[in-house]
Image (cartoon, rainbow, N blue to C red; front, side, top):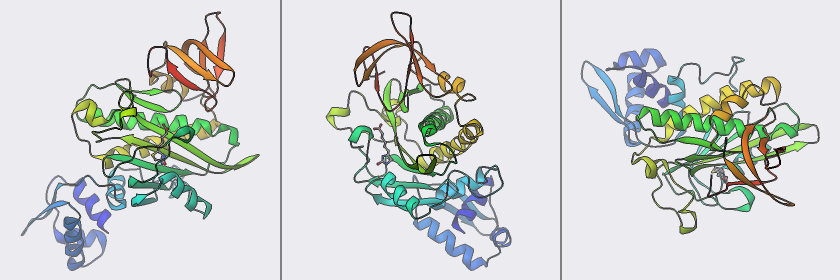
Length: 343
Ligand code: BTN
């Protein structure tokens, strides 16, 4: 009920009477009053004026299921899947205070049948995981540490493209947040799935999968976003940054999560029509920091340098070498760097 109250208050520009809330929710005035008191205890500033009703003044920077669901309810059509069912990305939310890794938690509940689209999100990770066995710094309350559980009916060799779709959704969500604050910081994708702000990393994505040779059981797409972090360990200081460090602005994390979930739903839907990137490659390439740049690829058998030309319909990075040959680089098998730095 708290999510519905917040959603109604959010949609209204002025006061909503207690009676209107009772009628809309089919509950008593006391029940509404109690829910409003609980919301106030959780940090919401809700003004109550006799004969006028309630007005939402300020929301706290929290990543609770109530906050995320109420925002999703306010964004028309976001909470409902294209098929009219309840399987939209982010339609079911598990919000945790602290967990070792949202990816680990998501895998555990996926093994026990958690539904497609479930979002696991935590205020803090005590054992956040990065790619290649690295750890991911995930301090309390200053970032977005979340994992989506997906159950796509497709061949497992297509799954790496889900990570590309997640990167597009994340970049789009961050760009929207920057625009809302009239900020011009440049948010781009570094192939395959890092996101950089002004050339430094603010997002990492770790995708894990359970599959059989011809079908996917589930995919967990874990996304880490450095939102309001101000201190990184020394070894990360040259490459890592946060939205706050780059812009000087503290962002409300919940609306970024809701926007990313909305974009991810759209990109996922387009991807699932063909199980490839034919309809998305152009938009992805427009977000790509590597396009037209010299890159260095660390392969198993040595290094390759060339000019990145963007991705193809299967998400492979096309790199033109000095000899004029175009190589197709497959994500997961290589690491890509700029010739003169991280990008
Ligand atoms: C990378 O190395 O770039 C990938 C980092 C992925 C971090 C996210 S945070 C949420 C999810 N849970 C984890 O343990 N890792 C991912």
